[in-house]
Image 1 (cartoon, helix red, strand yellow):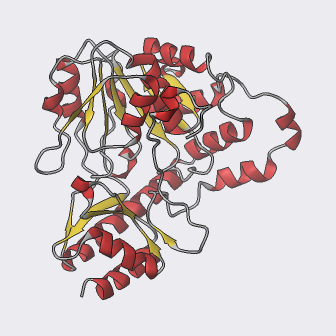
Image 2 (cartoon, helix red, strand yellow):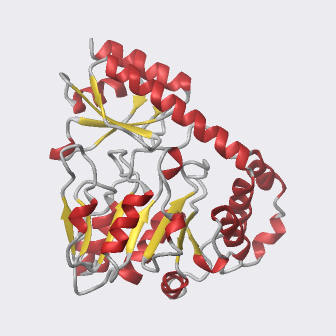
Length: 351
């Protein structure tokens, strides 16, 4: 640690992202989409006028927000955009959760949530998952300064219905409920239609997963105008020009090609279900998933051992070095060929 660091920085335990290897591996560890972005995105990248880069982008990214509003059938004023959903989440934690009462979150979920709490001095309390590894929404029925959860949850993959989320919102009216929908397009049910009924609901999403744009960093939030205004106040006190011109155009192109989006989404879901059946035949317990990954553990072999054996065979999955999760692996859904290679390797490892 440097003597120049502030005390707050010394106390941080940063989020650790999934490995981005430099060697050539079958990469099934960070839930990236195995298929390329929509063809219109490539056209944007080929034809973008370089001279436009000398100008600042639209600080409000109005055209992109209009495209998102059309896609999700909301008003443009109900949409906010940022550099990946991680930035949107970070701004939301500052805007809504620095309260005298604790923020409630699942004990096992996206591990960036407690990092944000530490960084922004947000008091929080963790809620244990139930015995089926699901987020128990009724456990949030207590005094709080906000609620945040991923739906479907990561890394477990379980998702709640829109009706279940509506019931939570009916019980919790005095604080913001943030539903992180990074994986919702792979079988979950979006809470976005509820924003008209519940002014305290904020739904976040990303272009990284179902729209194959993890390399561009683009995320969004949808909520009431008062919540979006809160996000804008924090954003404009930090970075007034978060979305660059190329990303705005690429994001719009990705949204406009609905047929390509649906086709890729269905391919991932089909491959996920085929892989689930094959893993179960090899002795794996596979948690129900509404995401683009599977959360699994073997009845005999330890998760760390399987992770190491797969790495030696050129396949990278995610192993969480935490006591509650140490037996589990999270396996991103790749192409059919990649998943065939995974199963072939596991047949050798778990014989």
